[in-house]
Length: 352
Image: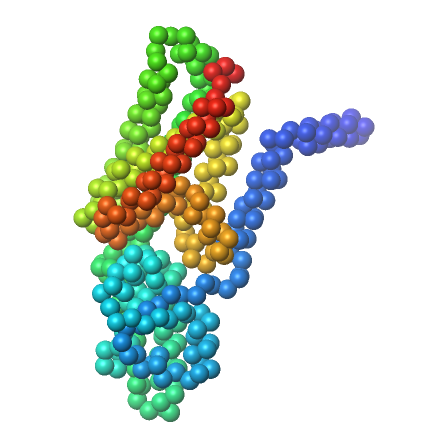
């Protein structure tokens, strides 16, 4: 029993003193608790932004108390430009456009955000039901007609593919650069490359070329499988995905180089890459919408390169937007690349 207690005490001390093990066993899971707690905590869903075009009797004639209750969950503004309002729905700037056609309340929504789409339909179905109930049991005065602003043949795969493709590019570029850099340093290959008559720029460009080739291959496989097997319908501007993929690869390659420059072991490089990429995927909407996330989490999300890559690919692959949709995201991704590359150059080590 004495030996057992001594060994147990020694192993426990070893666990506590091993900072890496302690981090992965305790702090990393706690980080996800904070992450999911922030995303899923019931803080009340954000108000839907809706534009009303023209007269909509079911809304205009609502009793004051009912309208006050509606305003707590929906922010309704009025406009006379229906075409512009519908374009804002397609672009994801607002949740819906409400119009009236005879006794029908027409709600135009986008399926790109399925959470918001469900809320829109449920909310305005309630408005119509309340208006009909106020008709004192007579023939229903209004009916709800939901209209998807995109082609209704579009499937969920349209909105899943960009986020998963962005995540795959981030994983490949970050892990490939981080692990290879540490492995080459430990094996002495970096030192031999440094002494060889090869410019450092050639070594860097070779790594960039490999990462870009892999990313383009991933893109071709993703799109080919999604189109051929799952019915993905690409818009006419989908080739703009290619420059986005190139910029995104450079951004995550620079993150991988930074992780590899800091880490001393392959295990440490894998852990650090996981620590960066996995939470970023959740915070960037790669797996599910952040519609219900609190404002502070949304603000953090907008600072992450993967969020801008995912949003831009969604714009050109599904929403049919043009070059204007990729200019700002590419500038952010390339700026992120420059900052991370500069830091990597300062902390880079040739020897283990």
